[in-house]
Image (cartoon, rainbow, N blue to C red; front, side, top):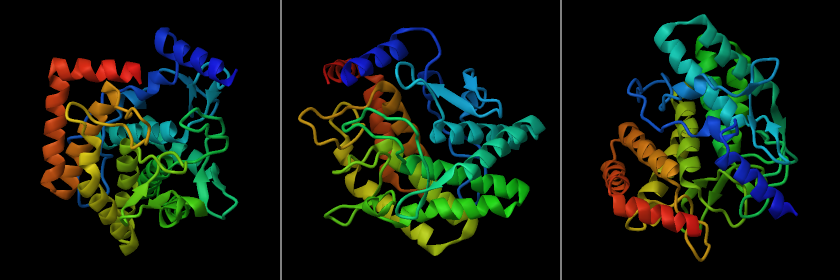
Length: 318
């Protein structure tokens, strides 16, 4: 029955024209050309379409995603943070007070909804079950939500200078210092590589886009606070990517994750494009040529009709 409900929800979201969670997520991935690397400025991706999300909002103006089926309408802290970051970017460009009100509204929601785990860490929970390799039972949390929540709160503090924002960002940052078995979001593998896990499952799956996005929250925390532990964590994450990025290359496309399944989990065309944009940004942030190499290589895969169609066929079979 659970699997039947899953397929009903997926078909409803993907094969009908009505609003679903995909209305929010599938913005064309791009690099924010206004990004700066040595201080906290505009967020690294534009998120401009997300800033004007055409879906549902609660009575406080917080966006909600419709997952259809049994899950229905839900708060997703990742989506809420991205909506706020998109409005922050537009505020920086226009000084429009409506944009400022929107991202500060999101910052206030993040402060109010930072919840304590049984380990004493503070996280933004997802309060709905989610079908993944294992079903993530509500409430569950994510390194991706932690990183992007931090990025939003720091920018709110920069504009408003209310210490509740920096205090909440500090509480959220503590999860990066702790292992996934201790209420944190970090995993250290047998080769001493550090990973920030989008989905907290064991064994971990090292979702690439979530790892990269989460690492930007750590980098932002360093830029704003100059806390040495933050830059050390970020540099360790970059070292992991330098050593393991080739594992995500299958010769014609990129992988979404290291799933350990018999068939490897290829990225969808959307996530492959997201990987390319993220690598371009990492090259800007670090000046490490490996990231430029893979962004160009994966762009060539996408632009090759044979490889793109092969990836879509493989993904369909998976």
